[in-house]
Length: 216
Image (tube, rainbow, N blue to C red; front, side, top):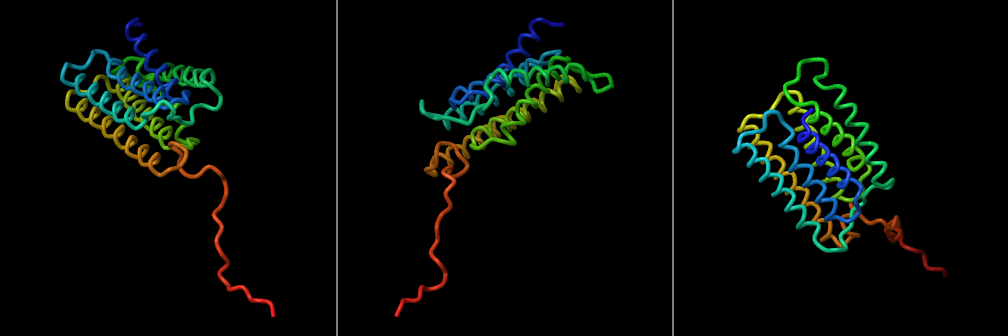
């Protein structure tokens, strides 16, 4: 096992754990940036300079747009209800599955650690996508899921060629931009931060359709 590759895989998984467990919005965004920036390096052989630059630019641009959307020290997101230890256990279980099922019974062209990190990120993305109650958390979960799919593809098919790297970098940047736009729109609506809607649980009252009959 390549120690450098193992270190990168660990950084990617830890970034995903921070992204799904942190309640401070900018801390969660930093976790996603760490995961997406480290993902291109989980390949054997490493991508060429053009492909690597495309992936890094896409990851940094998408993360920067999310950082703008999460501006303000008081910007909060849902975070994990069980805390980071539970998220770390989920990531560990996903990594074991990804490492053990490398190649899915066939000859794989990429490193096992890419599949392990990809499955860990996919496992962490489930909760934000299914139970996320604010648009930023859902957007971060979607970013992790797409990053997980790219890592699994690298583990199965080997290092993508430069054109595919360019497309993947553009995909990550566009996804981050769309999530940032929706998050900023949610904050502008006047609800509680990035919430999808009012959280008070009170239904709006409406006047009766029929006119009241005045007593005689």
